[in-house]
Image (cartoon, rainbow, N blue to C red; front, side, top):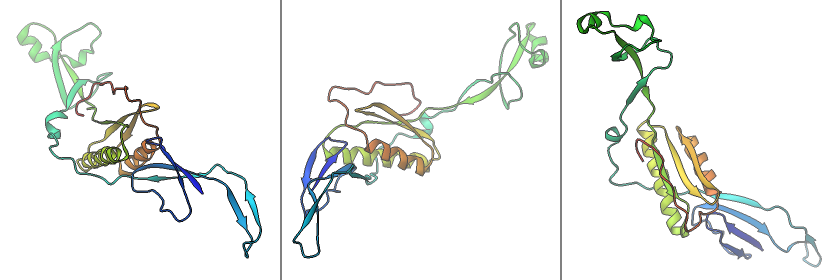
Length: 212
């Protein structure tokens, strides 16, 4: 006999001989043998087997298509910020001179027209934070849907060449996992499937993001 525990829901049950292994829902299944015996070939004598640490298996979700996805280019806009230390940049911003600015950045023609020192400040693109969020909580069917949509949404972002973060509230707190490749996505999903469920009253607090 084997006792099985589904980590994402906390439920446990006894798997008796001849029963089918319960892999119909996603999550990590931890298996612990109970009352193990080793018999001789004739089945006349047996020895009891001491309990061991058991083993586990991860059942991954089936990716689900997410409908009505907002257009990425509308929300993930490229923002620009001053380049630390200055130097060469293809984009610049014009502003008044401040003490400590490099004299080589002064726009002399524009300064002569305005009568004030104008500086060309180099700019660099800022990183947009893209999040895919959910809460690890619910029935096995609900978790199948949550993880399936999470995986489907993440794959859609990867197909759009958009690195992002998977942010999930679990029983061990908020897990924020970066995803830029299919392998990183599978690793993130496997990590989350090993997490216990979040408390019923817990909420996922919002954080700044360009798109979620």
